[in-house]
Image (tube, rainbow, N blue to C red; front, top):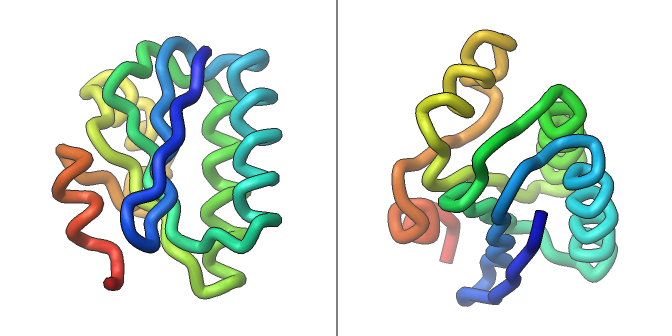
Length: 112
């Protein structure tokens, strides 16, 4: 998996590409921990180029959502493919995450 980063106003955008499997999850958790430790509270995860998400990736997303909720932050997932949305739905987590169709829509839903 590869990561790309950008700051858009008060939103930290983390683009991901590839597979969020055990190796990808470790990379993601390490980077997100640094982002949160630096004080970022509005995180957009761009799934445009993510082909796969396994249970370790789901666990990482849950931990991120909880940590942001405890600090009055917000997490939005953007451009999540139908198969990955099905994984979230089947696991009962579809309602836990804010999932929007595009990065632009996601950016527009964060506080200014």
